[in-house]
Amino acid sequence: MDFKTIYPEAHFSLYEFTRSGLPSIGFDLFHAVRTRQYWGTYQGYRRSSLIPPDLCQAFYHRVGWDKVEPAKRDVEPIRSNE
Image (cartoon, rainbow, N blue to C red; front, top):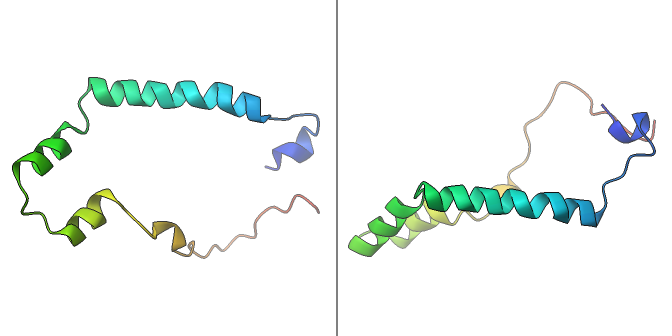
């Protein structure tokens, strides 16, 4: 649906983005720390230097994944100017 066409008076300001986004990020970080989600990664790096740099790059520091072309679709996208 083209939300803005249906509700032209709707808006989402930078303030609203910040007000709703920052607490969500904080919530995610709190739970990641609480459940020790990255503890295994930390321990693995601390105990072993046998991980090749290219493997480390592939698993933990993905670069270039945003350059992948999106999959082709059989459906035309909704154009908001039509």
